[in-house]
Image (cartoon, rainbow, N blue to C red):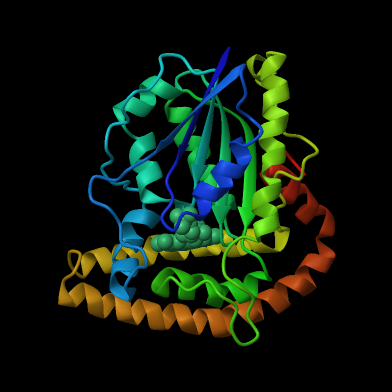
Length: 303
Ligand SMILES: Cc1cc2nc3c(=O)[nH]c(=O)nc-3n(C[C@H](O)[C@H](O)[C@H](O)COP(=O)(O)O)c2cc1C
């Protein structure tokens, strides 16, 4: 009998449906799947108000993590752990960071093979690098990564995802597709659980090698890597400025947030399109380098 622990934190329930689909073909008479939702001590709003959303930005970008409730009724020894997480400001969401930094995580994850399962808009590469560090701090062994991203082109989700998070509305409007991950992509996530089911029955998780190869587990868009790197640096500087302007909910901080939001909107409508064009030209001269980078960040599962 094998035991799998599945951990996740989901606000709207989207990541939860990805988790449900993922495990639908994983559990059977020989494999127990223990699903636990990570719960912050103080819950986050959903939908978010504008200022609540940006109030969380410095803590998320700097990966301070929030306090989380201790998980109850855990088994002693899991054979595999699946960690489902979403991205907040190019970093793992605050409840996930909070949990990975907890003393309970140190005990649960020690020497365990881990599969990460991401559901986000479309920028997860830098966040996964941060999760790799957090997992190595608790002596876990990352063996696979699956990443599902929102439907439509990235440029559309710049509008549809914030609209969804700030209003709860996911429907299509004007020229924009619905927000969130395509239902078919969510349903198809069952293929990963199926593969894990077969692998666990052959003790393959003990080999420390990826189990989800050749299943299109991840697809890195090389053209976004530079934007994620620049974004991470800029988030670091702006989070410092916002923190400097005052504590959460203060007027001075709200002013700083407003200035930042205007700056961000200007960036999205000016620098981002220019950057895309410039990168398109540059990238045509660096195709091999880009392919190499994509391969690197698609490890360990690959396409
Ligand atoms: C505060 C916040 C910041 C976010 N930042 C990012 C981001 O940097 N990159 C990204 O791809 N998605 C980002 N998202 C979208 C989430 O990763 C995720 O797709 C969405 O919140 C739905 O997840 P749920 O299952 O928790 O409802 C952000 C969401 C929130 C709430």
